[in-house]
Image (cartoon, rainbow, N blue to C red; front, side, top):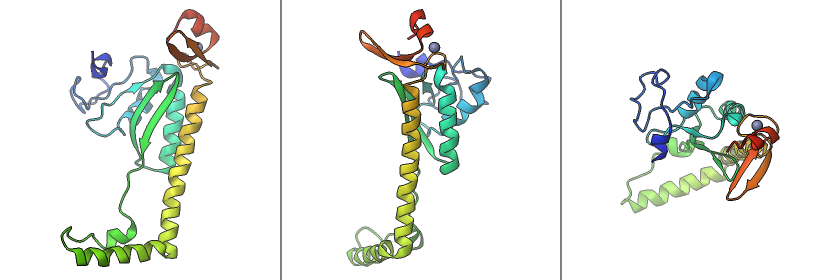
Length: 192
Ligand SMILES: [Zn+2]
């Protein structure tokens, strides 16, 4: 069974985006409840063809939704690649779409075969990159990447203290071949 088949698609919430079973259908988890709309917003950030679902328990939905809001504040239009549980904690893979730097936007790259034009373009681009404006541009791009990476790292750390099943305080539990972050109650109930 593929991941795709494992996830139930809810046609009422698909909004006619794609037919259920389609790779681009939005797989709202059955236990999404009040989080359905917010989770849908996250899944819509997954590029077409990647598979739009979230593979973790409902205890982490609030964590994921908060993270998405913080990332969206920093980088409107950022992309989500994958949201899942791995080795008992959350993995949130995302991407900041890279646009051309301002120099390249104003000076389109020349034809590949045109060595002379390329050499000239590269000198121009390097000169711009070394200028105050260029340095500030690359610095802010780096800072944005760092800030977003930190937000994700925080949420992933938080997941190691949050029961994946119910959202209560939890701990990372190792049992046999699996790792899972659970609270006492869910662990005793055998949630996995
Ligand atoms: Zn629990």
